[in-house]
Length: 214
Ligand code: B12
Image 1 (cartoon, protein in one colour):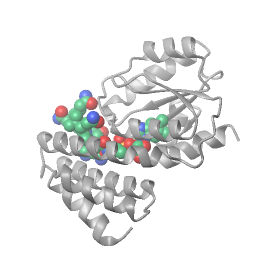
Image 2 (image 1 turned 90 degrees about the horizontal axis):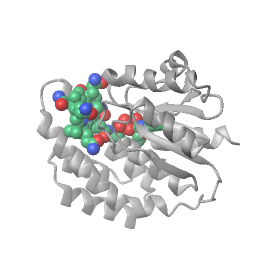
Image 3 (image 1 turned 45 degrees about the horizontal axis):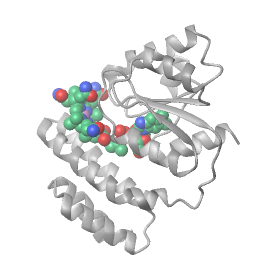
Image 4 (image 1 turned 90 degrees about the vertical axis):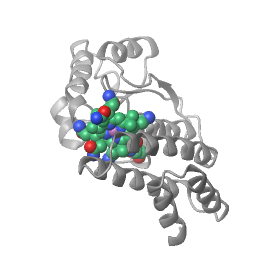
């Protein structure tokens, strides 16, 4: 992607200017830039805003505005991502949700979009999903994969609870538990007894799921 566009997207994010972000995304798509590359630039812009929040340079209303710009931007990008040449109905089902106590859903929604656009049947439980809700959905939907997102270190214990409940019911062998989100990593996946860590971004998440059934 032209530097003018990527820099412009980051700057527009920093100004919470959704019109400018959308205009630049449209320009990038018209220039045949891969929508995943655009997604990557947007995610990095948001990550920088998160860092400024932890440094005390930005505050909660800034994160709220950034989240809103991202949601708008995702709506613009969605048709291009969904028009995936790789689309093949996979016959595989994935239950996805953000763990209890956590309301972050932008990343989870991106991952969901990648799964749907590649032919997976996705049941989205939303945010703040309790251990019981993951368990009930596993019983009712009989998914191939249970994908759990957690964006905060403070909600890792809730992710542990969800995995512990699935393990206690013997469901972790039937359904592969894949974890992701800002607070997840490989080490945590093995510590909690998940099947695996799904990767750092939506593209990696799709790659991981494809490899599980290759
Ligand atoms: C936007 C935002 C918000 C928005 C969320 C809007 C929404 N609808 O989601 C709002 C304003 C609501 C919010 C609230 C809060 N937030 Co906030 N937020 C952010 C911010 C800036 C961006 C998050 C985001 O969307 N990133 C972009 C997406 C694309 O990235 P992602 O979530 O990581 O997802 C990608 C990958 O992780 C992966 N992935 C995600 N899920 C999954 C699942 C699977 C299975 C797989 C395989 C992969 C995968 O793929 C995704 C796509 O590439 C982050 C900063 C950051 N560094 O992320 C802070 C951040 C997550 N928030 C934080 C905090 C502290 C809070 C609050 C507690 C603030 C407060 N004082 O109230 C509240 C908590 C609310 C709650 N109970 O959940 C902290 C968490 C720190 C920690 N403890 O770990 C962060 C890290 C900011 C910081 N640096 O301090 N937040």
